[in-house]
Image 1: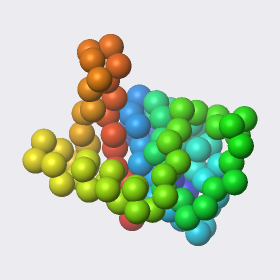
Image 2: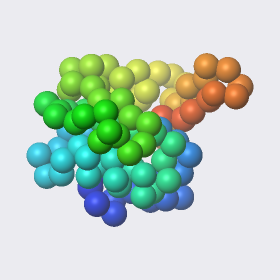
Image 3: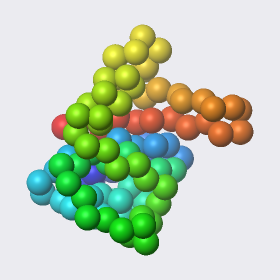
Image 4: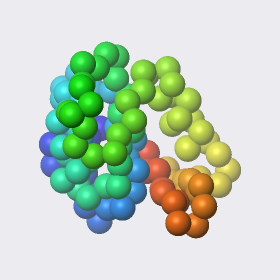
Length: 103
């Protein structure tokens, strides 16, 4: 999970981080942790969100748990995924890696 000070900057810097739903920490504070660690963006799984557009402090995608489970499955179960990471490419200039954090 993306709890306060939980992310390793060396591991997540420049990547897209997938943060599981948490009853311990609000999604906004998860965004702060992802930003602190230097990640490019975050994908956040939530039951419900009351975020407003100006609450987004980093590039973010907010998904319900069911959709987020599909994203996690795509990233971790694909044969090209290595160590919970998969490179997603739109083109050479706009590529990102998704890092899946396990509970």
